Image (tube, rainbow, N blue to C red; front, side):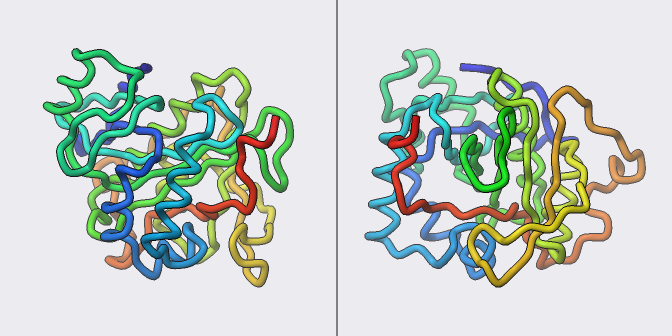
Length: 251
């Protein structure tokens, strides 16, 4: 397990868990039209989501496609536990990759699921050393800074992977909230336009984050991270949380 010390300026911190069946209830309850359009590809139905999450649980923890759920953490520190899932209802561990001490910490420090994200080393437009990063926030949790906390946790996870030097983010041009989150994590627009991963009729802007660079600080935004954001802003990076083939089939 790796520890992340990069905590949101408002004290927001998340623990990344390997996405699995225990997260189905939170996703079904928190999905909305925004997530269906920008991230999920369509609105999840219970049976379809259950099938997808069961497949996700079979993917290798160090494989080319990784998806995470993000859980609130109290106390200002975030753990990354990609080998276990946490039961959303009870907060108890369901995997075998941690010991009793870790389970006790998780029960005492972790709260509800607020969103999630992914790191994909395979995909359209990716070169060697690049990975696609996406992030999403469940509808009831938006406007509280969780998108920024999730993006930073994913960035720090990528930094611990020697295969990744650059993160690629694909963001709809009208999605001001996602652009705000991406910039806060250190990503910058490249000026390139690409096809939306989930909708060939739409275009997205390509952003990149060099993991060797430290994000620049904007003092005015440090004082008010939500400045210039509308109440319905989305805090969702563009991605498609479903694949026709099992990523574990790829080398």
